[in-house]
View 1 (tube, rainbow, N blue to C red):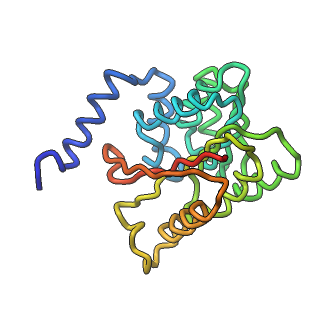
View 2: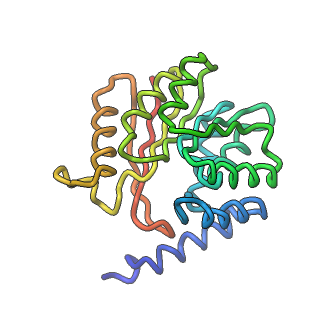
Length: 225
């Protein structure tokens, strides 16, 4: 293996750019570290990826963000800062334990007024948003249970309008996404949602592979026409 292909170097590169371009403040550090207390420790996005999500929200001019999967609220904080004082983030979390941790992090970050945490199965919470005819979201971040990715995409499309951005995380899965015969429901969830995006004429999309402190993975970025 080339020395530049090792995970040690990947991690060092992440650290290099994070410390110089996107250093975390105390609220972000606390939120990231509290992830160890959730039902899925170490599942939050990396610091540089959080900054990337925030930048995407700013580039899109997003004022309303919908997030599938909260955990400790690390990425939620990046989004909440990006939408500004007049914006709102609605984040959907299955577990009460995680929601409680996240809410404490939002208070610490001074962002609780612009974040709405909804607890319960994300598909049901999203359907309630649809039933309530809430204002359209400008950006949707899908980072919950992967088998339900197609369900979440359908909900995202019902809750957005043309120009909205939809991001789906953890789509490479150490390369397993290429295995059409995989018996991993998470892989099949990614493959199905990729197919669903590909056949929709109203979506433009691409996928990016990532390496770093979170290993080898990636995301899909789509935009509604």
